[in-house]
Image (cartoon, rainbow, N blue to C red; front, side):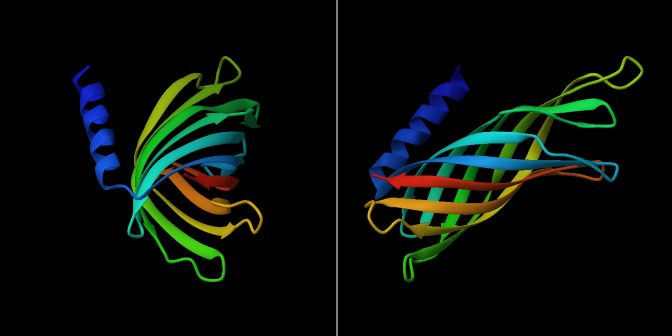
Length: 170
């Protein structure tokens, strides 16, 4: 409960200094690499943030649209929640670049034959992204965004994604 109130207080303090709140929806092609094998479940992400002077704080919630398998074992990203600090370039000819660094908590379910591992694991840790966006000419405050994101990486597993989405600034 204390965490909820801390986040609420933190979120309300951002509003005092924020120039531009924004919301975005992305379609992601995720890649789960494990022991040189890859699963590629698809996902959807909702991003909400506030920016000020080419800096932003962003929260992201990601859920899987489907699963994929490696050697008869299904991999499913149940959800991923992340909080990021975003460094934003200036807009030049309608284009901009964002670099994000933060912390993501990714929950993945693995299921397969009885002799294989079955269960749910949490992958929590450093996460980063680099994104390019372009303003949509006839839709004010709207941008198309293409990004590469690393949700988690260690010596055993690498969870990444390429996303295409749309962002609206209020």
